[in-house]
Length: 432
Image (tube, rainbow, N blue to C red; front, side, top):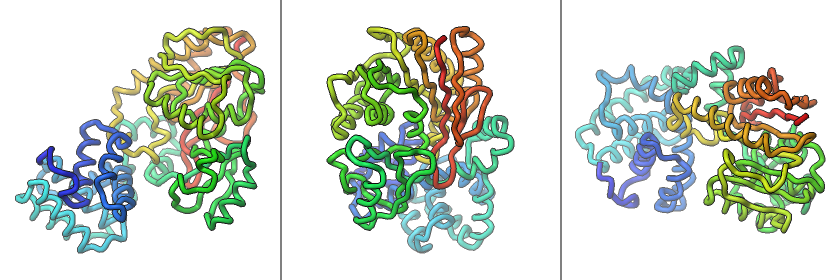
């Protein structure tokens, strides 16, 4: 395959195959997608986006379905990827069969694999004949890398089958209304006036879920800062904290700034430091706060490593949205299925522990720390807290009196749910 080949000189499926190969080689979808979308005709952008996310969501299921169709394993990555692209169109979309097959076969030729085009054509035509059976197999597949499936089976024995299906679905688009500028009901009315179907969230008191596809910047009040895009379960953070008015607050690992903004929408802290190790991502924090009219002299944005950074004084409250495997947001970032490796988990757990222990020293007595992850793996959540409480005599859990999530030995776990939020874990700790 010619790596220098112009994206615009090949068809949509060939572009898709190139994107998926780059993901398999370790690049994230977020890094790649704009480059590809910019080179695609406007009328094809939505299809390209939908196919890339859908194929990644079904990746391991498609792999499972494809194996019995082959006489011997395929050694060429582009050809194997092309088969998944073709099969996904036949089994999961309403794209006309002839278009799905001819466009995919042409893509194989355009990428320099003319000799394999007959094989791809034959397998996709066989898939047409066996469609009902293959769709049932794909539906039944857990669709996860085996190491992750084993972990979820161990952690969530009773919920694991449902969880695998949930992780294959798409997540809803949820807004957090900026209470400083407009009320939730008033904003919902604005959406309905623009014929945009939406409903209020069940757990977040400032959340609205959109019931249709929209272009975010075109929504009413975007430029005025009336709302942000944020998952409903991520919005619960600000509802769990004590009163932060006139307090010194640290948002550790703050980028891209959703939680920082929510705290400033709800409270007026004397000082809030948004801390993150990635200066590029901190630009997003600044842009978001600026659009939401929240960038005041009380807010300081600092690029520093949370494992070593020293606060100017001990904080009243620390929000620690710890680095994690992000398995809880797999619906929104399906490339994590391919990018995350089993060996990453132990390293992540150690990093969480280091940050947690260091930030704990920056907290004053009587202060509170909210530990958060967007993971559903117990080793990053419940087990991390069991270890923390076992080694910190000055820590006491503050029970969360809420009607959502699953109570753990410490904290509460939310699992991704159809039409609702992603997988999140929360544990609130007081320093005594």
